[in-house]
Image (cartoon, rainbow, N blue to C red; front, side):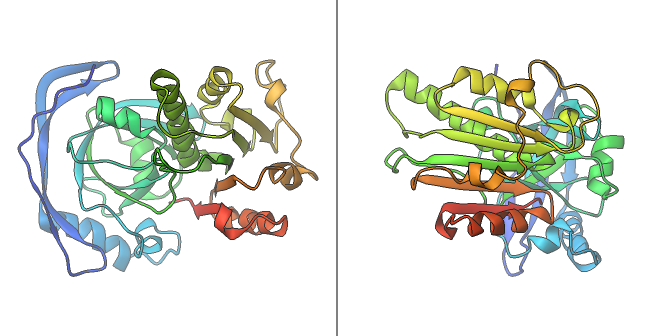
Length: 330
């Protein structure tokens, strides 16, 4: 059931800088927990000066090339900065924690594959995390899902060590890496290539594809998706994130969705459930990936700095740039 949210705020965007700032009154959100929405309200206020500090300080003070705001300073963002409340959390692997956020602003939207600026009260560094849920979940339940790998970066530390149910943050959508086909678009096949936590935006795309397939089956209309092949690599099977969800989609759409999984440092026995999907990517890896039709598009997403090298190797196997969509982790 869609949770009900009370609204008391308006958002104002002030142009004139490379990174627009917004005056935000975070609306009161009904308290929520995993599987239940309560009735007590709580509110969080981000003033213009606070949000400006959160945005600009990470650009001006950070000297790390890997800082999210610095690396994405020229990337287009949506104007809306929305309040969000943590409504669920889970350990997806020994190093990755997922969050489910209830998003306040009804106009907040995203395309499968995009990320969010993640503003945390009391943390001066702005996080950048890819959305791993489908746009349909937001449309139906006003929720998005993120999966965050443990690092010493302040936003990731906050997610793993401080964040609790009902913690409140603010989010803003950005990114040019997405899959958003329109009903009249030509059908195409997709090859999704991910490593480690780089599965997040590609899982969003895969879940979006599943929603499109269900819609087409129910309404006999909409975008006609081709075949989808996921190649996913991680250190070991415990770090293959969302593997149950991925295999559920493969089993739900066996004629449309397939996956090949690869592990690089497995030290324990692989489960019987996973064994049929575990393949050896060495040697024939890229030749296998590019053995597709001319109507195939390739989406690749790896933790930095691997994505450019993967894209280059695909190019060496005659994957043209117009059929290749890639980006580094945020």
